[in-house]
Length: 499
Image (cartoon, rainbow, N blue to C red; front, side):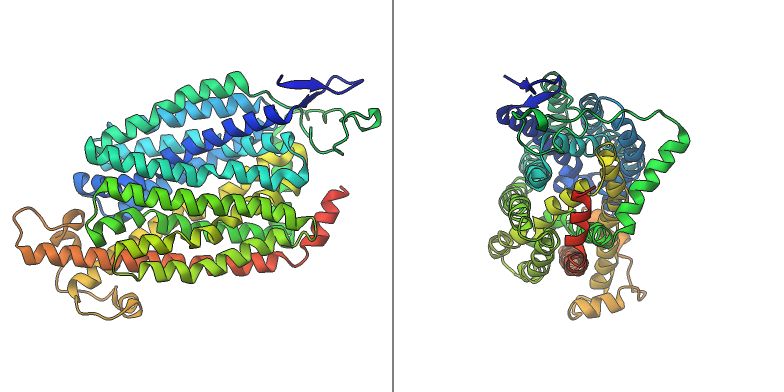
């Protein structure tokens, strides 16, 4: 049975089994969201070679071109979700982004592929804001970080499936077939979500969990406010003041944004790094990156939610300290992994830091959801994602790709150069040869001498390694902001509990 009704009232009470089913479907939706979003990182090397792209262009396809409409449209879609059926919004959005992902496989140029990536971003804008709002209505405040950690598990799960399936499909069939095959199943999932998931009343779980007592029956859902442009801007401003005007929440937002900047930037070039540095095939790279991400990042995401909810019962500051400790610990471990000269050792070490790294997601989302009223929760997620993704997803891959392009030029012209600081200091110095002309797509042209091929490959591999390492340093910076967020967190959460 999907739901029961409160005694003496007409509002539904959902069983634990049904809530778990809903959460499972939303997890599957978010998994497809990240498969379609991140598969371009796994098959990017094949696209780069086929379409003769630079790493900056790859960064634009995986970052800014996706993030631009994704972030901008997220806000009006979230405002719609505060008034309209959230389940319908998620289902329609899933159809749109899945269709555009499949269309990416038909692109014949960079411009066409960029256009389709804009479309993917349009669809995915309707996923997380209504999903976070739904989860917050199904789960009580002290369970939200845990529930949101399960939903956020879609990030490593989607990254894993996208990497494993995308790598294998690109190697055995083509990168075009990979886009089509991973895109189309999302349309079937959209139908399941629409048929199974029920729309709960707003604020459904913001009560004491003793539903069998008449005096504890869930109160009536807050009335839907009348629509007006002035009211919409007023609501946006009210949520903005919470996100950026409350010290603990502000630093949680800065922390998740900076950490995601480093994560999107480095993650976009990890699969190409294994190809460029170690000569591995796309299928093997997809398996390595996918399994590492699925295990370590997945474990970290779940630990972050459940541990912060558990520790948060003792002190709310743990919602900030858990991410702070995790991000500061993971940074040097990541750097050590990418300094290895053997891919097996790199992969083995990479199993460790993700467990610490990804603890930041669920506590952040939980604090944001608990900081606003029921009819502002989708808006809060959309505004958070607007700030986060415009900077992190829009800028991270582009920054890392731009950095790699310039570092590659430096190493091509100075093959005997020293470490990363020497390269960063000299990468804007004019060289004797232009790397982009000498190595189109990052490799030597057909028929080029063996020495030229080796020079292109070595420069590309060294530059990718160093670009990733620079991006990883953003994690430690983010950890500082989460530490600052712990100051005043207890007072803030108490004030929200009494609101």
